[in-house]
Structure formats: C-alpha cells, structure tokens
Length: 121
Image 1 (cartoon, rainbow, N blue to C red):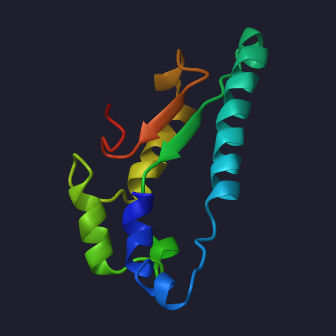
Image 2: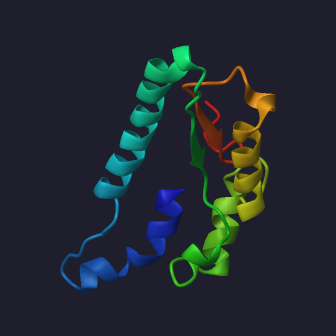
C-alpha cells in the first residue's frame, strides 16, 4: 500500500537529482511501539481483568488522504485489497466499539488487523 502512495512522486526524483520520501521510519516505529505496549499492558493487567488490544488499520478513505493520494491512486490501492475498497472511518470505529464491549471479553493482547484482507499471507 505504501508503494502505491509513493509511486506517483518517484518520476520527479531523477529530474531533481535525488529526493526523499518523508514519513516512513518514525511512523513505523510509533506503530510498532503502540503494538508492543498493548501486548505488554495485556500481560501485566490481565490478572486485574483489564484487557489491552491494538488496532492496525489499513488505508482509510478519510480527510487525512486529501492532497496525499488522488482518486487513481485510491483505485489502485483498492484493487490490491481483497475486499476491493479502502476502509471507512466507520469500519475502524466499529472495531473500536467491539473491542470496548463485553463481546470481546476474552480477547486481550492482540493487534487486530483491519485492512480488508490486505495482509493475508
């Protein structure tokens, strides 16, 4: 998915004699830290009946994408997702509601992938 977002800018890099793509390493490190924290908290707090989970959302069609990816880019990303579309804010919110509810009472220490199947191995 990241490749689909970055590819449109790549042709301009040789003409500029180089360039960089910002936003990768620190974003990835932060996401990894959140996932590790959720698991560590789950282990430490489970005896007290406290659950801790994390959500790993795929690309969501929200205002955060404005100016970052055009409709053609969104279409290309959607084609790579088994469910054939980007997530919506409601898709992510519904997972949050599920994890906060008693319906998930026996779930702790997981990172729930909400990507429309993009990460199926």
